[in-house]
Length: 163
Image 1 (cartoon, rainbow, N blue to C red):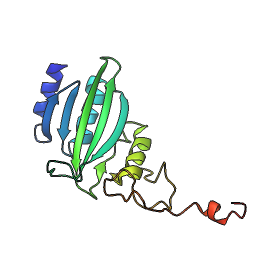
Image 2 (cartoon, rainbow, N blue to C red):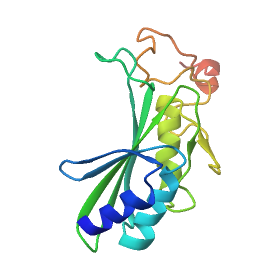
Image 3 (cartoon, helix red, strand yellow):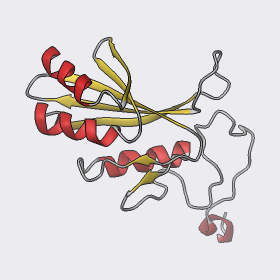
Image 4 (cartoon, rainbow, N blue to C red):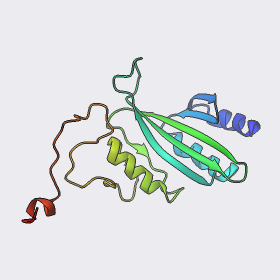
């Protein structure tokens, strides 16, 4: 695995911003490098399981951050029993590349990130809310989301005379 990581670091040197070895290999990459690195991990090292895609909002973080968000992707190789974490720094309103062409479950995971954080995904086939209703205003996992905000109710609930 170490030789493969070194190969990736040399092939994607322009796009890899940082590499760390923690409990697993961690790549911090540019958004242009993100789908290319994931594709290489899938095809060349059989990281065939997309475990999760989530995000971190660094608004009001104790130390200044150049980007507001960090998209976080976890992959797993059944053949090697190894995990990899890939992080992509993003500014507010910036689109992230979609992984739906590589992993089927990326559609659901990216929709959740869009719904909760408001991060759009370029080339996503069906980017719409997945957990909240369409009338919901905002994205609840943003650190500047007002916690006392009142939301409109479902139209069915508002029009129900028995409620």
